Length: 135
Image (cartoon, rainbow, N blue to C red; front, side):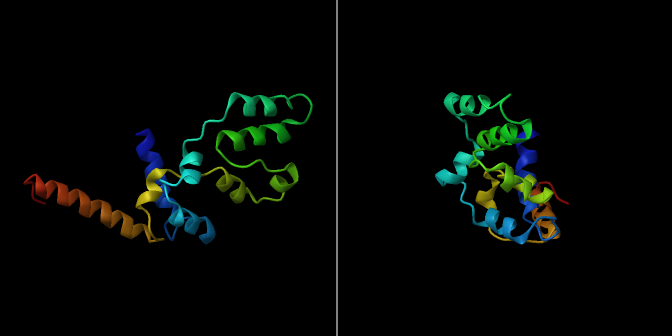
Protein backbone atom coordinates (compact mmCIF):
# COMPACT_ATOMS: atom_id res chain seq x y z
CA UNK A 1 0.00 0.00 0.00
CA UNK A 2 2.97 2.35 -0.47
CA UNK A 3 1.92 4.75 -3.24
CA UNK A 4 -1.75 4.50 -2.33
CA UNK A 5 -0.96 5.64 1.22
CA UNK A 6 0.93 8.65 -0.11
CA UNK A 7 -2.01 9.56 -2.35
CA UNK A 8 -4.44 9.28 0.56
CA UNK A 9 -2.17 11.36 2.80
CA UNK A 10 -2.07 14.10 0.17
CA UNK A 11 -5.86 14.16 0.01
CA UNK A 12 -6.21 14.31 3.80
CA UNK A 13 -3.63 17.13 4.00
CA UNK A 14 -6.12 19.31 2.15
CA UNK A 15 -8.97 18.92 4.64
CA UNK A 16 -10.30 21.59 6.96
CA UNK A 17 -9.17 19.54 9.95
CA UNK A 18 -5.55 19.01 8.86
CA UNK A 19 -3.19 20.86 11.22
CA UNK A 20 -1.33 22.73 8.49
CA UNK A 21 -1.67 26.30 7.27
CA UNK A 22 -4.46 27.33 4.93
CA UNK A 23 -1.77 28.81 2.67
CA UNK A 24 -0.12 25.40 2.23
CA UNK A 25 -3.47 23.69 1.66
CA UNK A 26 -4.29 26.19 -1.08
CA UNK A 27 -0.86 25.58 -2.61
CA UNK A 28 -1.80 21.90 -2.97
CA UNK A 29 -5.26 22.77 -4.34
CA UNK A 30 -3.68 25.03 -6.98
CA UNK A 31 -0.90 22.57 -7.88
CA UNK A 32 -1.18 21.00 -11.30
CA UNK A 33 0.33 17.52 -11.32
CA UNK A 34 1.06 17.68 -15.04
CA UNK A 35 3.02 20.96 -14.88
CA UNK A 36 6.76 20.51 -15.07
CA UNK A 37 7.59 22.37 -11.85
CA UNK A 38 5.27 20.22 -9.72
CA UNK A 39 5.95 16.98 -11.56
CA UNK A 40 9.67 17.62 -11.34
CA UNK A 41 9.46 18.01 -7.57
CA UNK A 42 7.30 14.93 -7.17
CA UNK A 43 9.66 12.66 -9.11
CA UNK A 44 12.92 14.64 -9.10
CA UNK A 45 16.23 12.84 -9.54
CA UNK A 46 19.30 15.04 -9.01
CA UNK A 47 22.39 14.71 -11.16
CA UNK A 48 25.57 13.15 -9.82
CA UNK A 49 27.28 16.55 -10.16
CA UNK A 50 24.66 18.26 -7.97
CA UNK A 51 25.02 15.60 -5.27
CA UNK A 52 28.84 15.71 -5.44
CA UNK A 53 28.84 19.51 -5.00
CA UNK A 54 26.95 19.21 -1.72
CA UNK A 55 28.83 16.14 -0.48
CA UNK A 56 32.09 18.05 -1.02
CA UNK A 57 31.03 20.23 1.94
CA UNK A 58 30.98 17.20 4.24
CA UNK A 59 33.70 17.59 6.85
CA UNK A 60 34.17 21.28 5.96
CA UNK A 61 30.88 22.56 7.42
CA UNK A 62 28.55 21.15 10.06
CA UNK A 63 26.12 18.36 9.25
CA UNK A 64 23.28 20.81 10.06
CA UNK A 65 24.40 22.83 7.03
CA UNK A 66 25.19 20.29 4.29
CA UNK A 67 22.62 17.57 5.11
CA UNK A 68 19.53 19.81 4.74
CA UNK A 69 20.94 21.03 1.42
CA UNK A 70 21.16 17.43 0.27
CA UNK A 71 17.61 16.76 1.44
CA UNK A 72 16.37 19.82 -0.46
CA UNK A 73 18.20 18.71 -3.59
CA UNK A 74 16.86 15.16 -3.51
CA UNK A 75 13.32 16.47 -3.09
CA UNK A 76 13.63 19.06 -5.85
CA UNK A 77 13.57 22.16 -3.66
CA UNK A 78 15.82 25.16 -4.08
CA UNK A 79 18.68 25.35 -1.62
CA UNK A 80 18.00 27.34 1.51
CA UNK A 81 20.57 29.02 3.72
CA UNK A 82 21.23 27.74 7.22
CA UNK A 83 19.86 31.02 8.60
CA UNK A 84 16.63 30.73 6.59
CA UNK A 85 16.18 27.17 7.80
CA UNK A 86 16.76 28.21 11.44
CA UNK A 87 13.93 30.78 11.19
CA UNK A 88 11.40 28.14 10.14
CA UNK A 89 8.89 26.74 12.58
CA UNK A 90 8.94 22.92 12.94
CA UNK A 91 5.75 22.67 10.86
CA UNK A 92 7.21 24.88 8.11
CA UNK A 93 10.32 22.70 8.06
CA UNK A 94 8.24 19.54 7.58
CA UNK A 95 6.08 21.14 4.91
CA UNK A 96 9.07 22.54 3.07
CA UNK A 97 9.97 18.93 2.23
CA UNK A 98 6.43 17.76 1.58
CA UNK A 99 5.41 18.03 -2.03
CA UNK A 100 2.41 15.74 -1.71
CA UNK A 101 1.73 13.31 -4.50
CA UNK A 102 0.31 13.33 -7.97
CA UNK A 103 -3.10 13.01 -6.27
CA UNK A 104 -3.18 16.82 -6.37
CA UNK A 105 -4.65 16.36 -9.84
CA UNK A 106 -7.88 15.27 -8.14
CA UNK A 107 -8.02 17.96 -5.45
CA UNK A 108 -9.91 21.14 -6.27
CA UNK A 109 -10.88 22.54 -2.86
CA UNK A 110 -10.34 22.31 0.88
CA UNK A 111 -13.12 20.14 2.35
CA UNK A 112 -14.04 18.52 5.67
CA UNK A 113 -12.76 14.98 6.30
CA UNK A 114 -16.39 13.84 6.48
CA UNK A 115 -16.88 14.81 2.82
CA UNK A 116 -13.86 12.75 1.75
CA UNK A 117 -15.02 9.68 3.71
CA UNK A 118 -18.55 9.99 2.34
CA UNK A 119 -17.13 10.20 -1.20
CA UNK A 120 -15.05 7.06 -0.64
CA UNK A 121 -18.08 5.17 0.69
CA UNK A 122 -20.32 6.34 -2.18
CA UNK A 123 -17.66 5.33 -4.71
CA UNK A 124 -17.39 1.87 -3.16
CA UNK A 125 -21.19 1.47 -3.11
CA UNK A 126 -21.37 2.50 -6.79
CA UNK A 127 -18.75 -0.10 -7.70
CA UNK A 128 -20.59 -2.82 -5.75
CA UNK A 129 -23.91 -1.82 -7.36
CA UNK A 130 -22.32 -2.05 -10.84
CA UNK A 131 -21.34 -5.62 -9.93
CA UNK A 132 -24.90 -6.41 -8.86
CA UNK A 133 -24.10 -6.45 -5.13
CA UNK A 134 -26.68 -4.70 -2.98
CA UNK A 135 -26.15 -3.01 0.38
